[in-house]
Image (cartoon, rainbow, N blue to C red; front, side, top):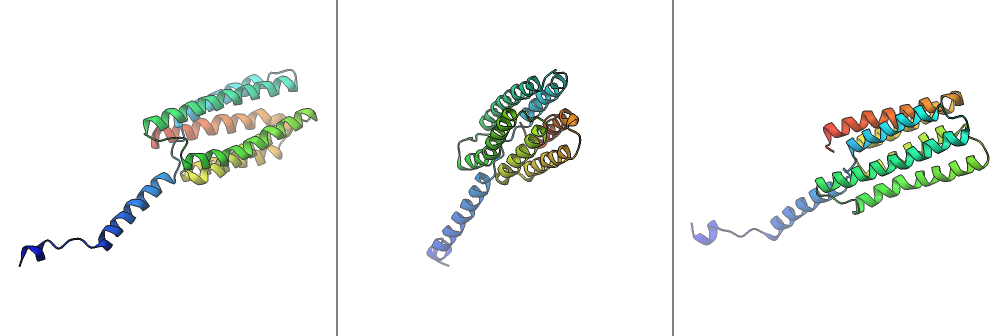
Length: 199
């Protein structure tokens, strides 16, 4: 056997197949948004649990709403900071294509929720705010979760189920449903994500 026969060069097809495998694996990694923060979710849940206790004691609907709006802003900041931290630890970025898709999926229902909240406040109708918040937040998590792991979509469906439950129960239960949703679900799923997905 000659040296030339023993060291036959790889064909162009072999190189192409290897490149396709590499490209497919890279696309699979980049197509999933995995920067959902577990610890951040727990922190958001703790804020919501505290807010539910404080909101339930407010003498007016306006003050009740203010408690929840402040809690939502604080939770959003904590969640975003946790996402940034987890992204840095994993060498990822929040501004990549998948991160932008996740954010867009989340943003549309949240903007709708803000607009509906304002409309309900101007109409002095507070009784459907809690169901609307749970349903729209769940819709945002579910929609954004299309670009993340299946667990995120499950979280969105749980929020939506609680929103439906809040619709068919007395309005006085609003803080209970909000505590279960924004508090309990965030703490429970956040702890699970922190343990199994890091961060």
